[in-house]
Every structure is written in structure tokens, then in C-alpha cells.
Image (tube, rainbow, N blue to C red; front, side):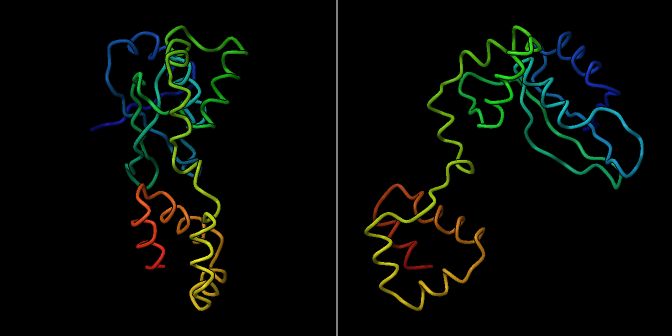
Length: 174
């Protein structure tokens, strides 16, 4: 798959206006700043994609000077991140959102934004699990000595389990 490089946000916007309703995906190429080739930047690409009801997904390395992102139209079941919700509201207020983008934004399920796991990780163990964990002084001391990022991921891993027995099993593994 060969990425398509755009010289500017306006050029990408024109592509979305002309092809966005028909195409199912587009791999957009970006040059690393250090190589000096310029072109469309990632943040500008995301803004234009939001304006037309598209979203970025997978990122892949192309070579030492470039990488690419897969862009595709949002579906009705798409989950909107907090960052994209905020940015889309700004784009609408600025009058930059095109009808397809506004329509995608309006048909979103507001409850699904809560499902974005990396943005809504539990910050702490609930009462019974915290008590059980603290009862094992060695494990609790080890956990407290770990970097904040580790503690956040580990807490999410335990607390994201659906069943209580799974939470207990995961806690015991910590």
C-alpha cells in the first residue's frame, strides 16, 4: 500500500470533499520534520478528517523519513475520544466542519465516549480490593514503589475485569 502525500491541509480537505463519501479508506503519508520535506502535518490532517466525518487509525512506518496513517469514514458505532469530541465542537464553532462531519458528530452515541478505555482508566482499587491488596504488605509496598504509569496500567488491568472472581485472580497475580 502506498500512502498519498498531501502538500497542505487545503489539498487534503479538497480530496475529502471530492472522495470522502465514496472511499472506504485512505493511507495518508507524512514526512518527519527532520527530513525537511514538509507537507501536510498530522494535526491538520486529523482536523480535516473530523470536518468530513473521517478518523485516523493505524500508524505505520514507511521509511526513515516518513510514516503513514490510515484514515476512514466514521461509522454510527464509532467511539469518539474526549480529545476529538472537544476538537469537533471547536471546529463546528469556527464554521470549519463540513456537513458530513457535523452529521457524523450528531449521530454519535454520547454514552460510547465513556467506553474509551485509555481515557477512563480506574484511578484506584475499590474498597474491598484495596483492603485485600493492602493486607499483603510485601505486595502493597512493591506496588507503591512502582512508577505511576505502571500503577495506572496495573490498576486498570485489575479493575477492568467484568467478573469479581477475575478481579480477585488478577489482584493476586500482582
